Image 1 (cartoon, rainbow, N blue to C red):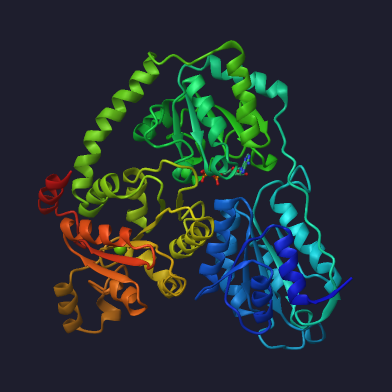
Image 2: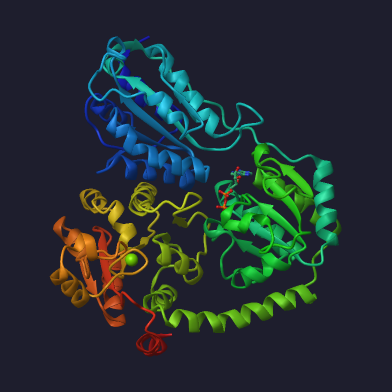
Length: 566
Ligand code: ADP
Ligand code: MG
């Protein structure tokens, strides 16, 4: 048996578990780990902040189904990554964080950047451990991967963040190479009695609704789900990241009648979505108090949260949808398309289409962004979206047509995830030759959290298109003249509204500083041409700094601009 260093063993253990991407920031003691990862065939992306690195690694887990690795140094490096771990855990996305730490003979001695890392990570992960010896590294890493695919115990099957702590002195120590891969995950079906019951509840429903969550996206249930929805004729509604599992323009999609559908449904088939804040807890006033929930989830502890389900289907969504499909196929049952419920939903969709135009007229950019999306953005682009208004409005205006093509602030509502997510998506695009655009639609405030990652994009020639919807602040800001006047009045730290950011900040120049393309955009025409130029460049990232009226509810001006283009 040949000898390898600890760094090589970590890299080869990750590779053996089919980890293909590593994001991180190197320093003592993990530089050798990153080098060994590259030598083992893992793609290494050096980021500018561990938080963004961890966001990126977790997006890999969601996009590819295998976790990405995040490599960080001890103490502050690991602490920066905690935000990414928490976000991954809340989203139920797999990620493996590898942290360097103090040498074994210096533990608790006040070593450089020493911190109780394993204990700290416990709250942000589902598994946190420090291998006791070099020999234990492969099995600890295997356990981490193993757990994320949910086969260790039937009770704890939900993907999430995991942490492996590596003592600094292990990195260069020698050990015999013993690495093996974990078996592929067994898949669980729901109890057949529960399936029969679910089908009879669905058949008896007057106002049924299917809700598609990001668990369905993660579980790659799109093919079975499409057949199920089409065979059963049921209306469906995606959650924000459930968008695209079935296309937003599918005839059974009732997203444009979301509130009505939620409120009046008497039976909800809930596929991989939690009844948390995103779904108004499944409770009145947003849901019927007597609604019957058929809850599908692989996490038994999730079943019954906030609402006691009429039927619980525990297991893998893809398999369960296939089971339900079998039931529907057997007797050819289909929910009729001429019911009062379908008519109600269709009327509401038609009415909302008119209202939403009027509402969005007062928020200039979103209206024409949606116009441009329909006209200019390729259907298969991955849309990354964050920022309070930008994300909310973008969710309704920017369509998704393919599964796992929308990445946003997610369950945890984390701002600052966008650039890391986009880098992960672009790395996958590059390595799989997908010819697919990654478009990041960001608020100006959201962009700022990880803005330096544009250097990462430029360094690796990742052709991400970033559209910064710039209203000079968080929620809203002030115009340059008002800002100057305020500055004359005294110390801005006492006067400036806490929501304000520098008016008309040149985020586009941040991009050009590193060799990417930057565009300052004030009009629809400028937006159109900047977008066309950006989308034709496959070598460099672009940033469109779209200045919008910081107090954009001055309806009149906006109405004119948008009516011209909608
Ligand atoms: P959303 O944000 O779309 O509402 P959530 O993140 O709240 O979605 O919920 C996703 C749910 O999907 C989680 O409860 C998770 O346990 C579950 N889940 C993830 N993967 C699968 C799968 N393959 N099969 C079944 N359930 C899954
Ligand atoms: Mg803003």
